[in-house]
Length: 176
Ligand code: NI
Image (cartoon, rainbow, N blue to C red; front, top):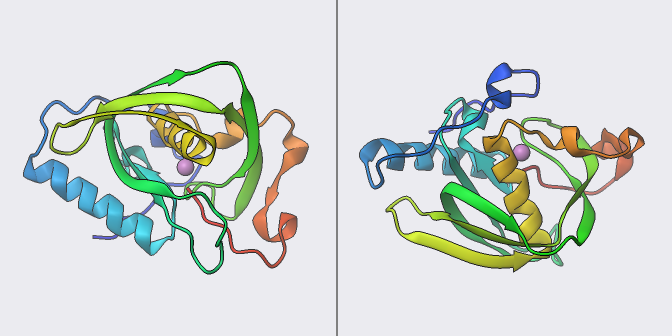
């Protein structure tokens, strides 16, 4: 079921999400299905449960090259629960991010280039990946949602924040 995505200004987006305690339950599968439906409907690259008003540590993400974005790095479709992130090194990269909770906007955000992330899938299987670049950016953005952080809060210079269609006329960009 497609759910309403909360927009920046809603206090629920600023709360810390709670860990999932039971895996492979009908409730958890229903939540993830709703998140998938909502993300697909809105063409997102990722979605965190707090964005649909559920304060649990659940994120989904995944990116495939499309006709509008043939050169984008592929990110595997992933359900990540109770995640922990470890930065590997201090190297940062800046890229233009968007968010389904901040529709129509883009901002230039610094992130760690290399990270390790750990957590569980919906069945409770362990996930442990070391990634870099766009994949690492997407994960950091989604996990931030579980800590009540929206990407505009990480923009270093707010002159690098604006409307997507003004910043990038003629380009179709995904939100996450
Ligand atoms: Ni987001």
